[in-house]
Image (cartoon, rainbow, N blue to C red):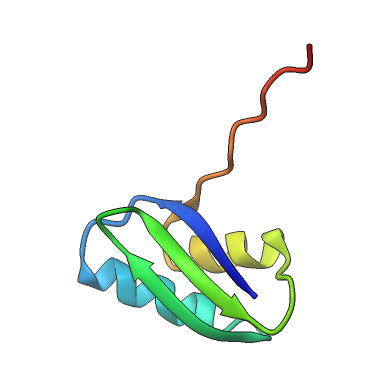
Length: 74
C-alpha cells in the first residue's frame, strides 16, 4: 500500500533524512520517499497506517503533518 502525506516545514536534505528515518521506524513501513520541493512523503507499507502514528513520526522529526481541510457540509 502506498500513501502520500503533505508535510510542513521541510527545506533541505537534512529534513528529508530526518522524516525518512522516523517514518521508516513505524511498524509495517517498507519504503519512504521524501520530496522536499513538493513537501511530501510517500510511504509504502504492508497495511494501512494509523494517521496518529504517521503524525507522531513526522512531529518527532521536527515537522508537521498537514491535514486536509474539511469542506463545510451543505
